[in-house]
Length: 249
Image 1 (cartoon, one colour):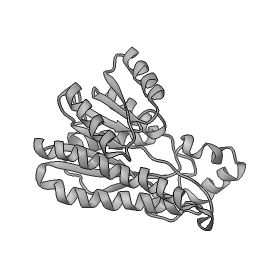
Image 2: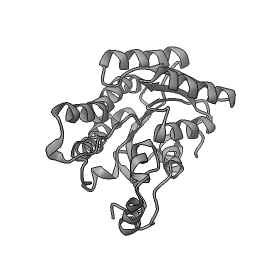
Image 3: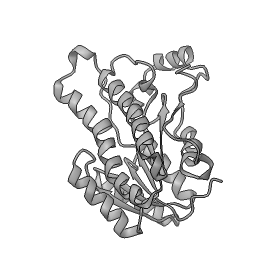
Image 4: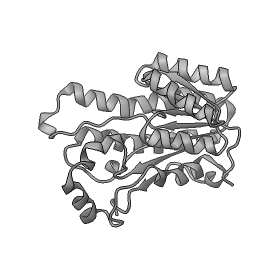
């Protein structure tokens, strides 16, 4: 039920953090991978590492907020592998500061990458999947889509948008055999919270607010992502599944 051997997965932001963990998970499960990210050297380094371990992967430098670069990356994936079975939208950013202190440019940057970029990649890959009448799309949302977090107003708004976008696309594309879901991580030990992890008070906050009383690891997301990509998840669509230690309860 969890077999995805030979399937092709395009992963945005697949060179670091949650995206890298998902890349490693899917390639170990037998998928062929295309990584799209802005950092060409980082993407190549990950591909070289995966290839040395027997995996099949390519790196596609590109900006997900640029429609033309998205189109080029999607077409390059199809040209190289023949099709796209799975899309994982993991690219994202966050800026922490008081809402009154945000510059408009910062607001736009977060929304452009987290929400607009996710839509543009879904749209381009969606055209291909609609023609094939099948596909799986997984968007990385956040617990911030369900509960407000201080000093993250644009991030909360962007991830709430991702969750609602996931529902809208799932409804619209269900007749074409496309399953679209989102995963909403809580506090996960990645570069996005590296500074928080250095703060001794952060651990106290986790113990006070997270029922499982620990920060999550990227490995905590691997099982549900594989489920959503495989036959095991074929009757799941339009959902955001929170992997947050109970924070959103």
